[in-house]
Length: 411
Image 1 (tube, rainbow, N blue to C red):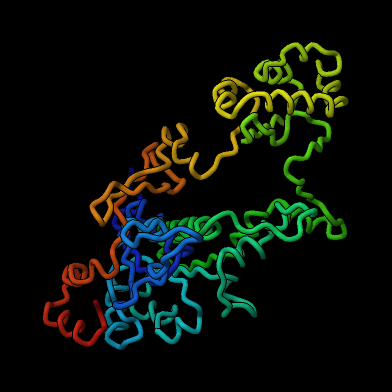
Image 2 (image 1 turned 120 degrees about the horizontal axis):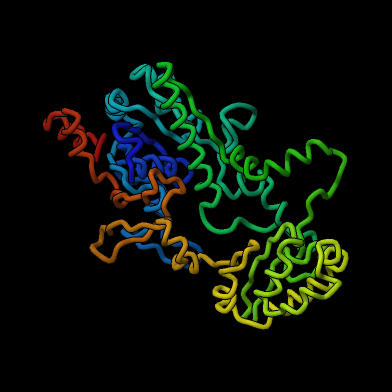
């Protein structure tokens, strides 16, 4: 993959997924990302031993690999005076400082904007937060399940009113990964601006801002219609509610899986859809043969579509619908995605080596490609794996490294 960030160095003091995911994207793009970890504990995410019911193998942990691939891990105790001095020395060699520490912690550790800019006035300073770096909740922490999914509006948007409570976030690090991509884009823009003007910017992205960006079209409409309740109502799964378009909906297959049809303008596709569904004769039925007719008789047409798809298994439709001109897609599980031929053809998944010498670890690539080339990268580092080599590369003498080790300032 074209390394558009080659020559850019990022100093990352961050934990968990949201902000480290931004560092992972920059690493995919060729940046040298120096991940600072506590000399003893490392990134707090390394301590996760169970994910729901699944045991986590520390050397093959996807929770660590996904947001940390390609980085170099340097163990520094940022709370010590010696560690802070070392951070400033590293910052002098970097283009970007990336953190998700809360304001009070940044001040306590002396890694806030004024401290890092004192060491390097030209550095891009990027903050990821739960609720933004301004306002009454500036000091409040959060996760993507709270700030992105719940408060950002996604949960209530997809929850049918018939349910007893809101739907939970779909899987781990959902909003974190989306938000991390937003940070990476902001950093790229800030680097471009610095290249053009010489000005070093601050970059702020929050889980809340990322969450309401995901629901932005709905929020925009709601702000224009503040007195209108229930603007967007999520339907209960399995229902047969249809308005005027019978070619839109989630349709159950014979083996209990689902196909999505989203043919927004049914008129031009009547023969195409009915033909692919094996009910071509109905395309000449006066009730369905024109756009006006099929919209008038949408309920009857919908039942025909529903029955046709229910008559065959999922695998049949995956092949049968390949040549259909109208838009459709399978409802895939996360297991399905790993074998999706279109995902594979477009290099949306790549391999990294495993620290335990086992089979390669498969990871989802970031969604941006340059010159039609898929992402390549190395595995996430073990905690403090690169401390000595990196410090020697910086010109730190061995006697000082040994002294810092003895004081517990580095690992």
